Image 1 (tube, one colour):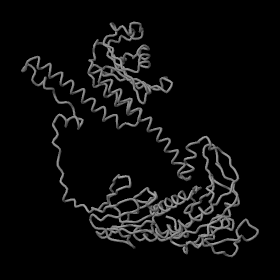
Image 2 (tube, helix red, strand yellow):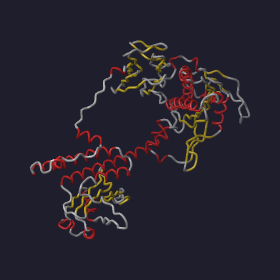
Image 3 (cartoon, one colour):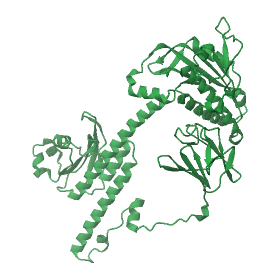
Image 4 (cartoon, rainbow, N blue to C red):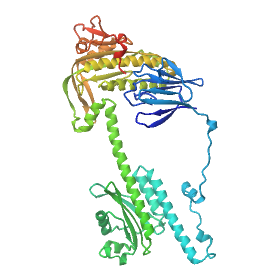
Length: 543
């Protein structure tokens, strides 16, 4: 079994088991091992596992793969404890022999083992030796057994409630725990909204449900108890209603025939989520001080569980909303929308943008010879890499088009050099394809090529659709022309319009004028250029 130990720049460490024949490494989300740091290229390197040997290979990264102070060329075999540096990250290779691992069982006392396994309580010592030991010692043993039972109950409460992420699950577990207190005969949970109004109440649970036609006595919750909980937010113990001065004026408690009760608030983050209530109709002083303390702690844990549940739901909602934006918009635009969600409205404006279309050439024919799962695997990996490249250059992902992609530069926000960013994105995509094809045999993928077209001009940009679903996109002749340029670009080539070429202010782009292109919708052929990205100096290549 082989693995790598990852050491991050901030000192954190991680581990990755090498269970696949090819592991891709880089800062892009499509990689098997993502190293999120600008010192690491989007697609930095790969680790290959072949016939019991492990190799690491650079994939045209900016900072390379450094082992023993030297940057490797091509690929290099890894041996036990070899250390590779990828940017600011350190990767140490380990070969682990399973035969050297010893496993020992923990020596756990029987009583604790019963608690951990959730087993039933053993027969108490006081019962086992009844009549054989002095009464004083019997009473002490009973007290200790009772305390042990309550502590076990608290342990179970922490385990049970920490794993529940639904109100029904929390309610069920809380009532199960409450009924482990001996004097509890009835009980329920009540939940409030932010205004303090009752929004939900669980069914009343009875220790001894009636059978046949006999009906259970209804719980009439005293307004006095409810008001006291809302005001003081502290648990209440009623040992005998008949003698409790706090509830002398409560007609509902007298009618209900209540003798003993416990009620506790469900609190979290300073909010009152509801109450937990149990009672006993027959016995005064049915609950001891210790039982009341445990009951209050169970309610506190229930309140914390509800608070966690609501927090998870809110976070999940925010994550879902943000994830929907991040699928199409660059991080800067996502941040803008997150700060001002009211700004997302139907409508549009006219603005200048650069539009890029990229399409995998001949992929339909290739896919006919592959299993559907392999087709999806290839497209998902390719699109994830391409989306990272688009976002890294400040672009907006407009849509996926089968095996193609459409991206915008300059909408909804312009960075001032939108045409340059579009061309740099196209160059990075072409370099990506070269690196993906290099590992095609190990991945059992076919090699493929991509044709790219870019145009610049005025479009109508905005959220277009219905109130139930809107998509940010652009429309207009500029979009159509960009699509026509892409359809005329062979695999491995980038074709741009004259308008895009005019906006390239840097001289580092190598352009070759092509014959004017006749495209649908244009009465005259349009001037076009080919970006000779293969001839650029390595120093100008993006990560």
